[in-house]
Length: 181
Image (cartoon, rainbow, N blue to C red):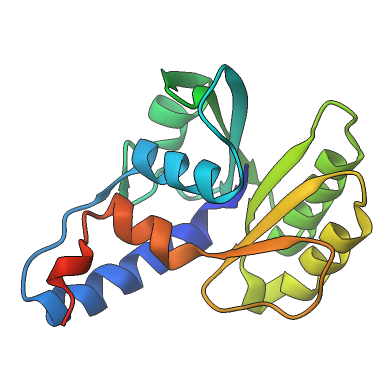
């Protein structure tokens, strides 16, 4: 899993603000592990003894996710792991230094993962409005990988699977379908 942590946090914030008004209750920070499980399932992973690496790319000034917990990049996410019925999830966080743009760093990281022979399946959460065209081209060119792109609306093109990011975040935030008008 490759995630633009700043984008993920912005989407979670927007969902919280909009759904608090809609369902008339406070929505606390979401459960990061539940979100990772939902993304893994949406990305095609099935229960078993799987090895999943979750990589969070974030701005160098950012210390943590604000709307998903646990969220501190150095204390909670980098070099940590958990195991559940889907397998073992190892978590890593990498700051984007100012020598390269966040978009370039993300796309270069995706290209490296696509080139790695040990990677079979990729789940990608990128800021599709900012640099999504490059992400879609990279994903479409990786013919031997099972790639799922997560976005807030359907994406044009092919050569990759796609899922709506909001559904996994709603689950992690505890928003139930029976609460929706």
